[in-house]
Length: 154
Image 1 (tube, one colour):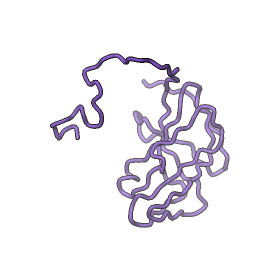
Image 2 (cartoon, helix red, strand yellow):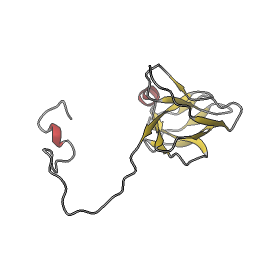
Image 3 (tube, helix red, strand yellow):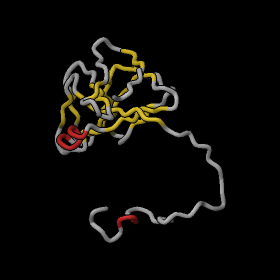
């Protein structure tokens, strides 16, 4: 059984919908568009979509807002910033900057699922200067270096 922790959400508009999980083991909770009418998004355009919600992310956690895979792959609609970060001290409205990556006008309906949010813990680092770093097998290998010479890792 998975432990569920209460996360406080303030409804900023009476028509706002609470985030929901699509299945028992889903990591991301769906966020819903708060719109009065259908919203058209032109190719290459970014539109700020309201959710009508403010959220109280627990200290030591962040809400990461990702694309919904179906909406992104079928319609080309995804958050413009790729991954939105909702900090635990933010109390404003949760909004999604939805970008149309497709070549056609796309439409978002009122109440449509527009993104998903994963609430995850994070480490606050204390960065310190050093002259040396520990050695690893990978070393300074950069982009694609761990799969060099194989198609599986490209």
